[in-house]
Image (cartoon, rainbow over all chains, first blue to last red; front, top):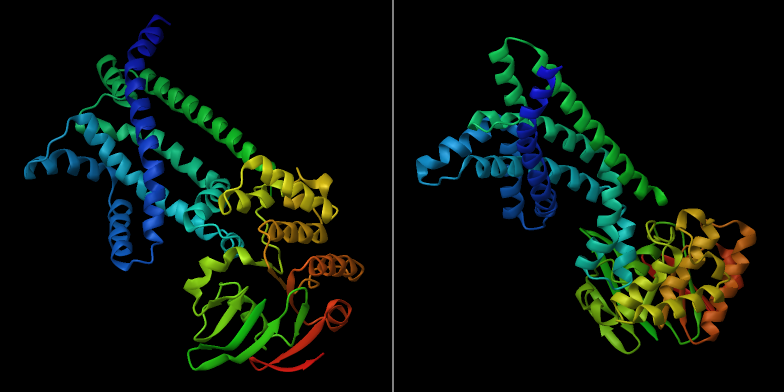
Length: 213
Length: 218
């Protein structure tokens, strides 16, 4: 029991790293995802091509590789970031690509009539997007976004590769040192609890958007 | 009030509008009748700036439009009630109506709400102001769409197949709303293939065939 309590104590620091990576990535990649989606739908072909290749690279290579590349590769051409910044850059770029594609699907699923309805009322393109399309899109993309957010909390374990001590890493070290699986069980429970909380939060958000059909 | 002059539109080599000319005067209800594929909807979409055209002009309240890009300047003067209404599902009936007056005319919210409430009263839906479109019947949704279009006080109001989604006994109600708007000085253009409705409501009926207006019986 004492062992468990000491474990939980040392894992709180790891939890802090995990949550920091999680929240910062989310806060940065969600808005960036909207930009990605809009560029992807742009009528300007060069912009579309650039974004399509960006998405191809982000989805086509492992996030682990991207992390390593940003951390070890960029210093070779003279660009250096500290560990934490590296992680946030790589995660944000990766998740913005996934969110971007989800948002694009959401935007394209809105009936053409909504655009035309706004058009004949004289709304500008920006007003139409912000007030008519975006709110309806959010409702539709909540389930897939929930999926990605839950994946993010687990992906955050990859930060060990650049030497950050997130909670999985802390547990692994404890497990090796004490020659027991207990820390890994504990960390598993931590992830489960986090995921349960997230699931609940998103359920509530979905409910808030269920006032119309 | 609305004058269409020698309107021509092609999709590739196929000419869909072939020299369309007609006029709707102030306070008139003009119906365009014709089979599907005749070009009625395309004419209506051109008049509302939803479709480009290759040559000809559209004159709305004295302003002459020669291309789809010109439409900004007459946007407020011409309104459209879509066949499937295109209400905004995430906004209440009242919010649907005040959106454009606030954003486009720059009206303040209180004033817009007051006007919207009057409009809803005039179409008999005052008690539905706080409802969402999905809670209304098709006929009620259509009346909201009419109120929403009227909120910008257009000089010309167009209806795309207004009876297509209505029970026959409800068409009389739409007809009387149209007649009241026309009596107040609005010019109304209706496209339909419902002859009976056209007879009931129109000042004049025009026939559309093969992309042109072929005949008018006064």
